[in-house]
Length: 610
Image 1 (cartoon, rainbow, N blue to C red):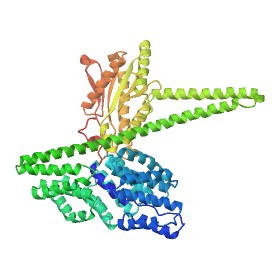
Image 2 (cartoon, rainbow, N blue to C red):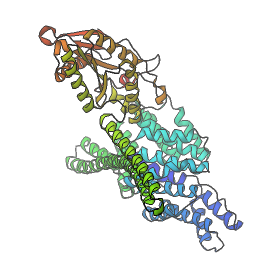
Image 3 (cartoon, rainbow, N blue to C red):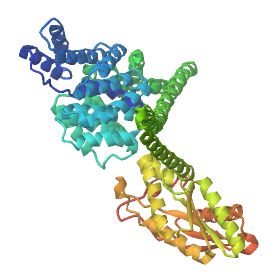
Image 4 (cartoon, one colour):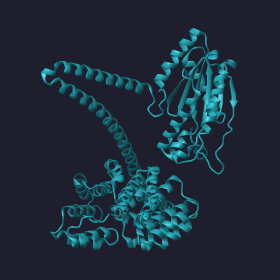
């Protein structure tokens, strides 16, 4: 997660901006466009052009706004004054009416807050900026903002989201510079997701693409990924040779974060090869640059290398000192990671609350508008009193009707699971208890089916919570056709569901559970963007063995459901009440399998609970 911080400043330099559309002073416009273009190509010439533009007095209002953006960019990237650049970009974001310029200012704010490690504010501005991308006319500017999102989500450890936005840019025929940036974002996300393609061609192609446009910094970040990949594959010597070959080039770029990452990795690899002197030299170089590093990750690596070297050389006093520094840096790194995760959760919750608040305000506004109409009618000419009273009665009736509809809507919300649209646990329990009382009076049997999705945590971890939510919706929709109008289906919580069947015996309920089990395995998951198999473990109980007691029905169905999981998942177990109330009838064993050549998240993560 921490390595993506090193890409932030590079990405800030690599963002491509649009040329201006106004045509006031052609000379000023040409210089402004040239400065805009040279931001990432020639920093020295870029700063020189800014000085020349400041000295001129023939700019239009639109050109001055774009010049202010370049100054904010200069503060963030070149003057090492990101907080000053952030304040400048904030003013521009609030003042700009042109969608392209406003989008650029928002993207720069995201980058600036990432550099200052204020991830909460960065996410807030990202949530304001990204929805505007469809209004941006210039494709390059739009790609810049999307790449900022990919960069920030990589840094926050939300690699699935970072991958999504990087792929969005790459699918839109970006220019070579943007393709280099988005390609690096995608490689980094896939590296942490364990989804890099087989072989090295993907990384090598990105390296060559970045070198073709002269972006040595991006190329070397990609080389670091390639070296880490080789190291993980047991080819440490090959990784060392790659990094050593380009070390002089990395030093020449002069970006301390990149130098520290390469040196820390070389120190660790050299230590693994028992090349202690070389490992020590690289580690000491990292420590010497510690003051310019925003993340303690590489500092922790360097002190850990020095600690292990001192131990091998039987220098206990030095080893203890290095270990203490390693422990402090490692704790700081873990604290930093936790802060990023907390920032993501805070903004996610804020976004949800804001959406709910907006919806409430819309409802209140509709009621207020209705009341205003009533008040307006009440102040009409007294000569139309009869007509006014008639209209008022009509309006009150409309108002009452709308209030009634709101009440009914609130009742539905209180009874319905918001994600799947079926009964929530509370309403399901009330309906089932009412059905048991009616069935007991009529002498009819009842049955209860409980089922829990297999390896659902693996689906969330592999494909993201959005895919997990999609799975829950599909599961609810797939089981609904098997239920009669008098039956009740509910979501008990998480990935656990239940179906209460009135007037159904154990055998019929078992057949229905098997139908549901088969239906779940046939869900086509390609609409989610991924291919995997959905299965569930089922437990069935009925009143002949449990009585008309919902707690016993739930308890015995739950026991059977977990018995099915222990027996291998993707099957139905029933509670018969035999053998002291613990007999289980195994109705079906797993027959479904993933399509040839593919694996489900459960198979990929079978060691996880599920």
